[in-house]
Image (cartoon, rainbow, N blue to C red; front, side, top):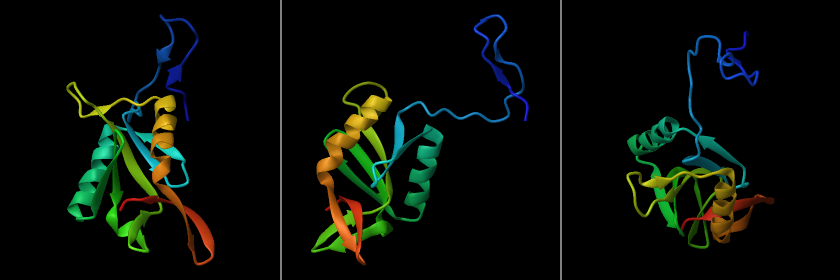
Length: 138
């Protein structure tokens, strides 16, 4: 596969040198976080596709924690002692208080801070003898 980008530290010669067939931005407004605390930044298009699909299937769950909105698949909940827990992954966005967008951009540091901010809503569950981190959603 041929390179389509060349960085030669020469603004007149480097950059795109081939044809771009498909491009996607992962600029950090939208994040998928796992209950194992791994994360992946996704584009707005991918974020919206997840929301649309969960809405279509009528499985979209949502919770606000601190200044964050978390979206998840409500069929993935486990009920323990009357509380619902999510094991898996969820979409995380930081709510904007003002401006044109509903959500704020998140840098890698912001994402780590967000995970720390919501960490108090996690619990360890023991399922069939295995331990899992789970997000309490109520």
